Length: 337
Length: 286
Picture 1: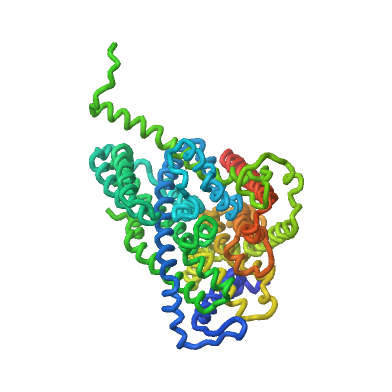
Picture 2: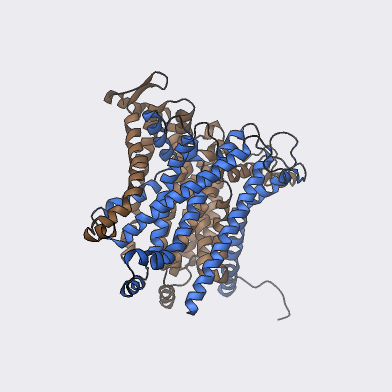
């Protein structure tokens, strides 16, 4: 056999690839095609399904029936991606630049939640956020929040669950890209008087914080002005104290590839998630994943569910393409400006 | 000097405050973030010692060790845990073998379909799990015969191998890039044939990458819920057991098993990490 491969060297890579690639073709590509066909089916599981191109109406029908869930999925996944970014960036920054001897330990702690069950972790949040749980009970006894205030079964609980579950996916890529930065570049920027950016940072923080806070207030279905003002204040403080010009001009742009990868790794699983919405939400917070899951596994409505899955997948591909163009990470990696 | 009136807000005092904030705020934030990450794990462990009054294990009632002394004493739970372990083992071995071969091919050879293969590896990782599970379910149903239908442990296994291959390829490839090719050439110069060179030189060098990939595959498989939910039918893995019991009340033993899995996983990763650090240090000394 060795002799045969020696005589036909070009076969070697294909021989190595064949088993794994075949598995992916049969159990990833072909099922995708099959699902596309299924989205043109009509009928039921009992009577059997029939294919017809005229069933393209499955698409508008499915979209119409689940438009609220689609919008909610985009908003919740977007809010969760934003929140994971806000938590992950300082965390990754500290580990990468100030971690010292504890770098490996801190990274280990970031991924440690993955060593327990995803379902159990999500159920834990139900215990933590419950009406008289770890978080609300003390606040209610000291009278800081009204006794009928709830977090569980509200949009904020669903978004918190998603944020928590996908936080390591955001932290690790940002850490990797920060870790790669050549410290001499940051020092050069400081030598060139890229010092603290106080008024600029405060104003930028005020505006960005206000906008994002307003959006979050809208998504959480709480007061928009309260969220906007609180976030604007927080943004201004962070901008005044923590944002230097060497950060905005050097460190942050160089870490954008990590931000890009982390956002995708968070947003894509978040938009298809249905576990957080099911465990932590209410019937008014269902996402498109809940609809797909219910149609496939409870109602056996394969055609509509396939159409929805396809719209979801196509939407993700379009969003990824737009996002890649807008952020322009390929320009960054080749050393623009 | 004797007056201790607060310093006026001169730029210098603001600057000093800023420097102090800069020094400590990031550490405080990181500490809080780590606490936030570990809080649910702590709740899982804590509630494995709970003694709930009814069926649901959501409210702390009192401390007991009785579920730790009887961790498998729920009908269906031992079978579910056993099945999860079997599927994780088998899917890890198959996916690690297939993925390592792909990784070798991608790094070692230049061939025409390289771009297409890279895309085939990447796209499954960019597909939401629900779409992966749903498309497999559609295929299994439309084929409609054994071994694909009715859904069983076999269909779960097919799915787990499928989603694990990409992660194995990515992990192994990262290890293969920057591989010291001259060591292989040296072995060949000393008269070893390709087969011997692979097993005596290449394989031991990439083994840490393969082990890391295998550990990742194992942990992804044993904890997978979404794809399994679509490909399991009535078969119950450990996550499926949790999901099925969610509405009627999750037995405390589930938290015990979850805690045990956490301890074993942390131990395994800790041991392999220490071994790698020690091996790296030894290699550096040499």
